[in-house]
Amino acid sequence: MAKFKITPLNEVSPISRLVDILTQAEETCPDKVAYKHKYGTREVQEVTYRQFGRDVRALGSALSELGVDTEHLACVAENSYHWINIYLTALLSRGVYLPVDKELPPADMLYILKNGDAKVIFYSKRFEEFFQENRAELPGVRYFIGIDRKESEGEFLSFSALKERGAQLLDEGYEGYTANMTASDPMALKLLVYTSGTTGIAKGVMLSEDNLVGEVYHGLQVADILTVGLSVLPYHHTYEAVVGILVYLHRHAETCINDSLAAILKNLKTYKPDYIYLVPAFLEMFHKKILQNMEEKGKLGTFKKGVKISRALLKLGIDVRRKLFAEVHEAFGGELRIIVVGAAPLRPDVIDFFENIGITVCQGYGITECSPLVSVNRNNKYADPKTVGMPLPCLEVRIDNPGEDGCGEICVKGRTVMLGYYKNEEETRRVMVDGWFHTGDLGRIDERGYLSITGRLKNLIILDNGKNVYPEELENYVGELPYVAEVVVRGVQDEGGKTQILAEIFLNADKVKEMGEAPSEKQILADIHAKTEALPMYKQISRVALREVEFEKTTTRKIRRV
Image (cartoon, rainbow, N blue to C red; front, side, top):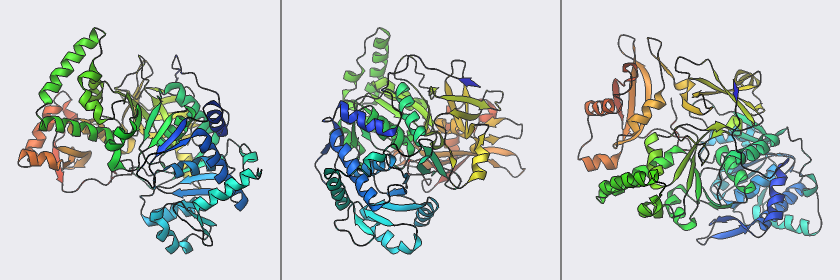
């Protein structure tokens, strides 16, 4: 068991309730741009902190007049400024916010809305027909509020009309919402997030207001947020909703809302962010595209020479990376300095690539049940990019049942750990033991207190000789092969009942086309062995299987394992 303290910590303005985040921003920089977006228009729209505060109070006042500001308020919609408006309004109300993954199958979506006791559902245009047709399936819902609706019809209300009514109430001195922003118990359920993990059935994670306040405050003590961020990841995911939206807000940063995943590179150039939060899949995609582009233009050799030169100059204290690789930086808008990556381990070669061109990659580790950030690297001399950094100051982390290599299950205790699973006491008791949350993730802590992630407990391959193999470690090696788009490593039994290590691979179609023909399984196995020759024999992959279609994924681009 160990409790770590990172020094020196960033100075952070104290907050005791979530409303403090909003009021401090309004008082400190009311006319500063809080959000930029292009929802419903081709032109970039700007919202100041003053306007954002009014929008939150207006929507809240309208909900209070309807008598639903104490209920479970759900939202099924794409990322937008309106989503953030609804989110903050719900968090500062006496109710509970229930964000729902918009990409879920209809049956799963209806299950979450019913199980999560939604009484109000905010939704975007694409779900208008869905909720009209499934009204009878949701008897507990009092109002459906269409973000894009122009007119209200019965229980289907117009979002814009509702906000207009709220603004009118504010101007008339109505205090039904504003007088109750701290009325709820900070230790009670405030944010109900249903996990969409790579395995298992979704569970409702219960997070309190104090969980969120602790995450924002202690997260900023160790997170080096800059001034302009591009918001990319789905808002229903706690990584973006808490570590992104709320932390950005308390940092008084400018948040630029990415309107679609296909437009990321375009929006990087439009908004010119200096930092961004991503999951490994996006960074690995950028990495592969850049290298492929260099190879097609015959510039890969020049790039490698430039890396050698820049590394030599760095040893002398001279940093020319941003000038030397200006063309690559321009593809990211020209201002990008920090990329914070979480949700899954990132390949070391990808980290090295971005470090070589002058963009710092800060790896972190989080899980929804911990609000979600557990540990993160700093953008300074205390960082170790090959790890996921050190735990937040409010947390204790220990490794349960470590093996010979020091690896075991990561357990977390402290302020940001969830209340439990909604309506699921049995599962709560299983993962919460004596105040410790058992994450299901495997890792090790070194003598300095730095945490490294080796994989998921459910994915662990135990060989016949008792040796443990972490498939994620091998997937990193296989993923370095240029013709590999996706890979999953798992244990399979041969005809004699012995466990072998199999790599199931989906090939990169563009690279295969460039090669002229797809590599054979025998050639792939030889290439893998060349990559993993330094590993012990028991970790060697012995079989390869090729897929014709890509793996099914979550909305944060993590592969779903069967």
